[in-house]
Length: 114
Length: 110
Image 1: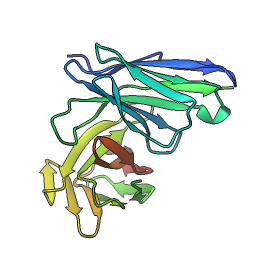
Image 2: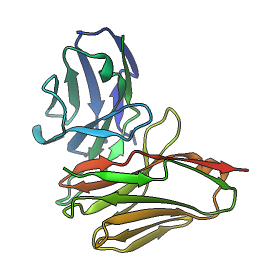
Image 3: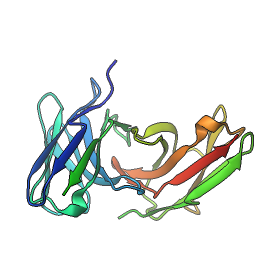
């Protein structure tokens, strides 16, 4: 039974470029959340999507956007990359059951901005 | 928004001793409190969680307590082993939005 998967594993970009990160949730899970984890810090909430609709947004600039597809996979897009965007980007999936649901994390994408 | 504080930031214990990590949260609407273990270079792994209608939960050597009135919750690890060494994160959640603490780096000394 596959867990949450993310691609790519690592990515190196330069300032000003654009990046797309991908996530596939656990089979049967309909909710995907994105987090940014800077080295030495806890994950910071970026977005939550459920049934292709945005259900929550953290305190991140409009350069960050996301979407969810009919198969519940998701993409996180970051435009005009800054050095400070260098971080581990984590995706988590959950199966909404009417309350606050347990989230399971993927392995993350390590983004380095030079 | 929710603010989660976690202490201590680092913790060293002798193998076999107990370890306690404490978190406080600010938003009384938070109703779910998971704890994650993250080993170097790996994904956060859920180790235990508690919901706001429960005061304590135990799973083998790991336990979590919740004091809703004081808005704090704690992770207790008994009989620590070297493989418990990792970074531990607490989180508080409502409406499926999770807010994490800054992490505790636990080292268990053999």
